[in-house]
Length: 411
Ligand SMILES: Cc1cc2nc3c(=O)[nH]c(=O)nc-3n(C[C@H](O)[C@H](O)[C@H](O)COP(=O)(O)OP(=O)(O)OC[C@H]3O[C@@H](n4cnc5c(N)ncnc54)[C@H](O)[C@@H]3O)c2cc1C
Image (tube, rainbow, N blue to C red; front, side, top):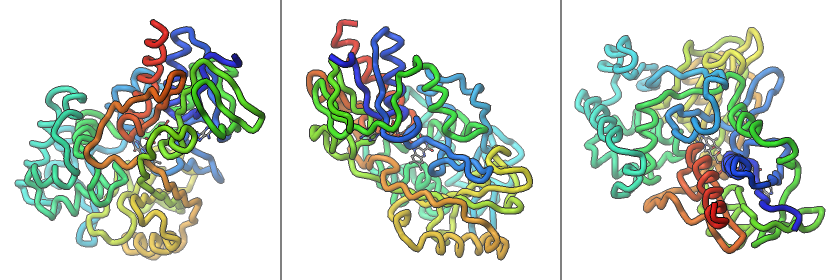
């Protein structure tokens, strides 16, 4: 036997699985196809700009995060609560008056929804704050759009605020993802902060990987096939008592032939370098006008100054859904942002376009969180496709899978 446990993939799920096994004294190696850890949560430095692979936000309320990292060690930079919304050709601030009383006036007068809608938001938040997260995941399921209708929202509030917000978080411009996920995300937004590590999102997986013994992770080692007790790499086969496939769902389906492909929600991000920030402040910007493919935007150098070199600004524009795959996206994005910020956009450098065909698994209702992780004796799968399609879901899934392996061994 070459190894006790072989884990395929050093994304958040694979890292959490490896950490849990090592903490229990089980020897596990991680084989990762790419040249770094983090999977979908990675960052690169390009010409002095920090570019995450896609626009990602860390929700500090995710309970699983606190198991693996001291969040403050990531030097978190927080977004303002609420958002700035582009409506009627202007930006309006919609704050969280409970956390930033100064935003109360602008929130009340913003043309986002009726005063009744604003009360409905408060009521929805109060409802998801009750009980536990598992309780929310057991609520009757439907689409996010159905949930919003059930909560009484009329079109204006949905179109101007809720659709662009959840399009960005759930990669779901049609609001067809499970309402259970909507409830959980709404709770996370309400009880915690939205943030990024100062040095980029990759600081999160790097901090988790740092807790593993040296030599545990083998980079640039793609696995070509995985079965009970065996994986195939370009250098031949490796045997193991237990194999854990911790890749994204479609890859796990291909490697094992034993789990279903969960489907994919695509997303794109366009990163720009500018001479000056087009907006001041660490805000999430939403398009309430549906003025083009971009649904969310942030001036990242206003969130963390490390995202741009001295004297420059960095802007990320996110395009969730099928528009992400349109080859004409860069031109359409620049046209849209020119409408927002004027001719200065023509001078912005397009630093990178990230097109991510599998941003998240497609979790339409009925959502079954906690899907089986044991495929066969000696073969397990984990990842966001087994739990909720999120950083929280991936970390939880890795830990849950390790616990199942340990339970098999009477631990
Ligand atoms: C642009 C974008 C924005 C997002 N925004 C958010 C957000 O704001 N908040 C949130 O909670 N979630 C967000 N998500 C979702 C979140 O990033 C994912 O749910 C989570 O990172 C998935 O982790 P994972 O470990 O399950 O899978 P992955 O991150 O996909 O990790 C799988 C790993 O397996 C490796 N691998 C694949 N095939 C092989 C092979 N054959 N051999 C060896 N290794 C292999 C991959 O290289 C990768 O490292 C976003 C995702 C994207 C793409």
